[in-house]
Amino acid sequence: MEPVRSLRNPRVVDAARLHRARIRKELGLTLVEGPHVVGDAIRFGCQIPTIFALVEDPAADSLAETSGSVLVRVTQDVLTRLSGTDHPRGPVAVVRIPDSRRIEDRSAIVLWDVGDPGNVGTLIRSAAAFGYGVIATGSTADLWSPKVVRAAAAGHFATVLETAPALSVDGLRDRGFRCLALTADGTADLSTVPPGRMAVLVGDEASGLPVAVRQAADLTVAISMPGGMESLNAAVAGSIAMHALFNAAGRSTPAD
Image (cartoon, rainbow, N blue to C red; front, side):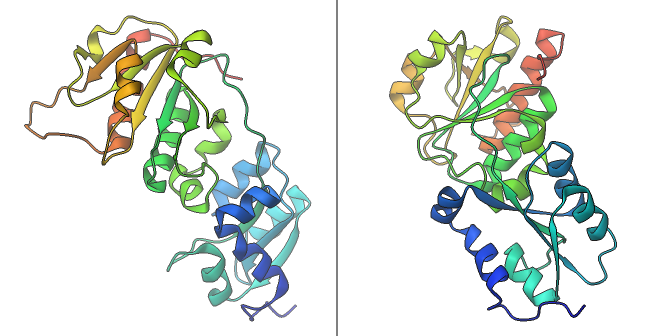
């Protein structure tokens, strides 16, 4: 079968529209790229209506057969359009976004107005690695944007994601979290934080956490930097905090 060559092909146009947040929200769909990430989406039971792949992609047939997806063979130009990157790693799959789930059984990293998709994806990946859930609030980048999914490297499918636009520190505390705010001028060190179910609050890299959020937190924590740097990338800071608290707890966080 000849591959789809036209960027105006209806299937291609519909899939490419998923790079827009409004369309993702309306349709409940997103784009996932790469054989391992697509494979994880299948393994975790995600619905995958369509998979786009190059003619020479040997993994695509098996992925489509396993997931019951429609397989559409495309040219490199079409795959690049769907991926949104200059050097896409196919296949690209249309995936139905799972429902947001309230985190009840583990600690969580709370992304407060974290706008950069790369930081959001990296924090999801780290959260999955250390057994944390992820809560997005405020103006945080869409957890299911293709850029975030790409940066998370399948982390979406290995942890619990919650979107809570109207979140408050008091609301987190009512849910049994001890709220720990990561700030450059924190008064505590990670090594002194007592064990327990944590909500690690991370703010936008440029502006940090809102003043009211920092003031309401149970603890403000700074990461020691003997090298003399003033601050860390938001994703790096959040990842270090999760790893340190995970080690301090001396045990893994409960899984699903």
